[in-house]
Amino acid sequence: MKNKRLCLVFLFVSIVLCLSVLQPLQELNGMSGGFFVAEEDVDIANKHNTFGRFVKTELVEKERSVADQMMKEGEVVFKLFGFIPIKKIDVVVDNNDDYFVGGVPVGISINSEGVFVLSQEECLQKCLKEGDLITEIDGNKVSNLQETSNLLQSIEGEDVEIKFVRKNKEIKTLAKVLLDEQTGRKKLGLWVKDDVSGVGTLTFVNKDTLEYGALGHPIVETAGGNVVPVANGKIYECSLIGINKGKRNDPGELKCVFVPTKNAKGEIVSNDKFGIKGVLNDVTNLVDCNKIAKLGGRLGVKMGDAKIVSSVSGIREEYDIEIIKANYQKSADDKSIVFRVKDKRLLQLTGGIVQGMSGSPILQDGKIIGAVTHVFMSDPTKGYGVYTDFML
Image 1 (tube, helix red, strand yellow):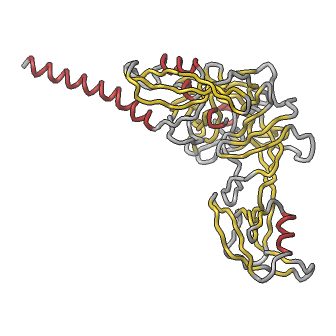
Image 2 (spheres, one colour):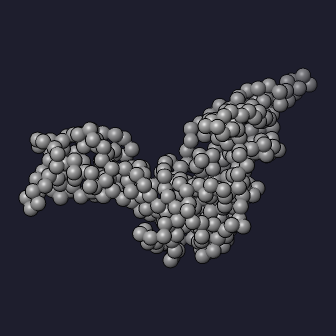
């Protein structure tokens, strides 16, 4: 009987031990490399048992020269029981730069690389629909409205090959070339545009280079859902004029205005899955020069208290949140972090997370670890964030 009890206890302990080891190993297996990391991030991961009690992390640094600049690279080694290597991931070692903390809304204006279909004058081009992004005509790239019109005038015959993007997938089709009876010019019978504008929130600005990241998710053309390719673009200071509070199944919004014709604060050079990037030429009213932080890598992100920075009250303030999940992620995604708004001031103002707050910096242990990206439609007090790693 005594031996039976001992066997049961041994079995129970073995199961608990296996679960304690296997679960972190499964999650580690799905973790991708390429992110940046600082020595203190490794210390935080070990202190808080981020990957389980039996897995410890170690950073091995190395340097290589790229275009006459020394780039710090490294390798994070995960060790079972502190001495058995079980996974190695290549990383970029944090350069220890200082960053201005964002948190203010900015106006965004982008001239697209290609033209978006708005609507049809006549229902003749059934192969094209609202939101499609036309990128080529008969093998020639088109960047704007003028190029599109000029190319059409050189077309011979009634049909033309169109390359366009729908839901971020390239498609080729034949379209009819029409003749405008009033002007005598050739046309496709489509209303098109080559610019997109909107509002987002600035996340961080490099103190020395003034390179910035904002929004945390891509700017897309509403009708077609296509990520807008940037030919050129600018960001502007904008004014908050009101707030529609978030409710269940209603994401709410920040109501902002800006004038996209003068006093641009900087250039937009790219728009990708993790927001817009570029360089500022004027930081006036966009950053608090006394509010400076380091960037934090995902290894240092832990469950528990954190803050988001926002100007929804009219001034830049920090609001309390709780990180309830930090995904390891096999591939880069803009839903890295799940958090809950705890701050009663923010809940009173906005109901939680609303449209326009995307890009609001997430701070933990004094570092910028990510940015707000989405709200839970079923619960505006909960939201998603993206790791700063991916935004870089």
